[in-house]
Amino acid sequence: MKQMYCPKGHGAMEPKKKHRTIPFRGIELKITEDAFVCPVCQLIAGTVESAGKIQQTIADTYRKQTGLLTGEEIKRLRHDKGITQADLAAISGFGVASIKRWETGAIQTQSADKTLRLHLLDNCIENTMTGNRDLSIPRIKLVASAFERELGRAIIIAGDKMLFAAKYLWYADMMAKKELGRSMTGATYACLQYGPQLNNYKDLLEDIQNADTSKAESLSDSELNIIHRIGRRFPEDQMVYDASHKEPAWLETRNGELISYLWAEKLVAIID
Ligand SMILES: [Zn+2]
Image 1: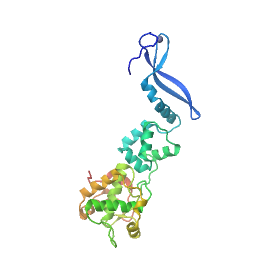
Image 2: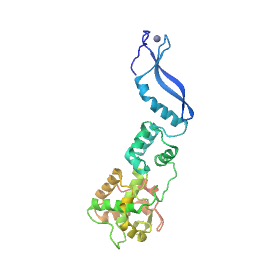
Image 3: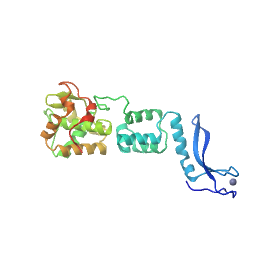
Image 4: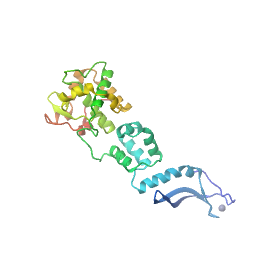
């Protein structure tokens, strides 16, 4: 902080933490501001910095006193998860602009706070079978199409058993759960003899082919990046097939049972 001098000519003023109580949204906020006090005449002067920060101080104090996440907390939790503002927007359904505003001082509603916590805190209620997302068949088609562009060939084929497509989708969902906290499609996977398979794939194939992708939330850059890395790692069907058979997720889940997304943390394939 810069030095300040008393306007009445008493020389250097001393930096002090100034406490005051202000009414805000029906409660009394106890805020602390940086200020300068003249040791001679006790004149108090705010600083340019403190004047600029006052809105944020009020917002954060309000959030602290009412049990909402503060801007700093949202930012820290997001960094802890290793995700960008755009990633958080994609997984939570909020706009990036809202995430930015909340991180820099705007106050989120109680319900927005609950949603943010759901996506930012690990000890929240998790759905380990869907990877924290409701099943979206249009999204399965979006992810499969992204793989088809990446691989330069079709992976969803009429009458096909999705033997290989399901493994690409499974890696995409598991990697998204691991890196972004949420699967891409919300699909559940069964542990079958030939590897991880979309649960009820026989009933889903036609729906996937006919799905209207305009109804699906589009894939985020982080999701597309995961698909790109998987495509680069497994350019051939046989490679993704073989890799999935080395995964503890498949080896240690009993035949016919669903594969938990908790295995996402223990993938052995190196997809970087
Ligand atoms: Zn003075």
